[in-house]
Length: 196
Image (tube, helix red, strand yellow):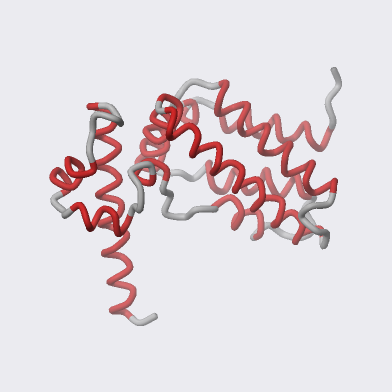
């Protein structure tokens, strides 16, 4: 892609980020159901058609992530001599541990809305199911096994279960207050075992 192509992509990314930022702020301030796409368009100074070009549904204004599967790519990038759990732990540190304050704020807003709006909560569970499949696929690649083997499926499910237990059990904004360390400790238990 040439320089002009990169410029176009950067402009699109900037517009998308602006629209999402405005939408999240309005949804938090006014309520998700009380805020229309037309209101978001007006405040963002774009047309409603522009919003739908970037975000096919209203829910996508909340749930869209610029990189849909950063964790999968981070796991894929880990050295092959790491065990699957070690690779996951390193990937979590790489992705979550380096989020900017702005990215943490957006994550917090997304989380607050996803927990409180039934439509978004259901969509978030759908996203988690897709993420489970993607994690199983990358773990299968790393181990030269099919994603649906018992070992790969069980590990991917355990990882997703740990993430869900934190998502549902921690207050909104916990990513700022040590939840990364708790996530890492829980993931380590997959390797060392549970002694209950």
